[in-house]
Image 1 (spheres, one colour):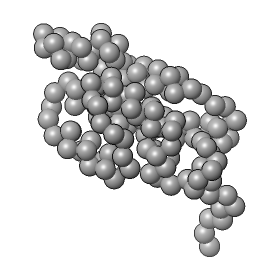
Image 2: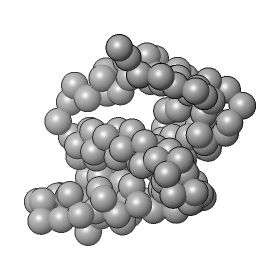
Image 3: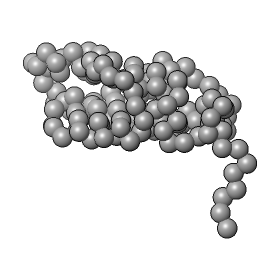
Image 4: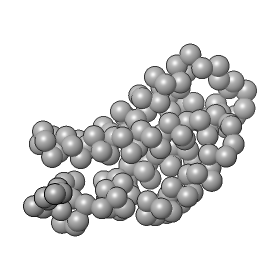
Length: 135
């Protein structure tokens, strides 16, 4: 008994095996998306494999600032939207641009933070709110 898979090639690209590392951080589309997300946070770093990105993100989640709250939401949105994009391509034949996926992630974060008491007195928090469209 088990699952029979005829093709293990990545749905997003088709050339390589679809592994966790490849799907979430090692493919041009998702590498660009994650890079764009990091840029919105003002972070400049090289995108690594799943294990290294996860370790870095867990390290960043230790504090309770606004940036950490947004980053937690963003991590979940990134993973969810990549999986959603994969399934859209696999089952619906629909392909979207990185900018469209990033827009969806920003909208999801804006909705989740709606109604939160956010002090914009801190210039860093204010800048974050502007970049993410958080009101």
